[in-house]
Length: 187
Image (cartoon, rainbow, N blue to C red; front, side, top):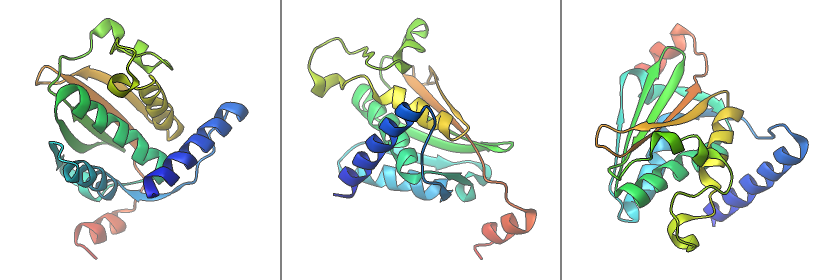
């Protein structure tokens, strides 16, 4: 029921954003580790092969954003990796003042010439007309818009496994050195 409520809210917010031309999302301080661990846990409970690793200070990193839309962004990318590559390997790392989350699969990859096209609404690389095997072609378009609405971006590259790597970069919430020390000490 929570997922259905989240999807309804995201759809309503997306339609409002399209109508007004600007994002309308609820912002709160989000621990990226909690968000990613929830997505991984949900997929594992469904029997999917998903791994998650944190590098550097990524485990304690926080960002300001809409938790529902960010969950949908990572859910879409993780589900795509599982559907088209059999598994998802997620790594979160910090680079300067940004959190970078990569999601790799072991599929056939996406041709470099098509990588930007798949972010357009209704573009599907899966050619059958069966919506169960390829969706409506909105997932990546929405995911990129969510990343951009949060001051970040979403790109695609080659995964070391030969599959596809989705790269999400988002700005970190600025924390004082005192706050980082307390967070790393678990206080």
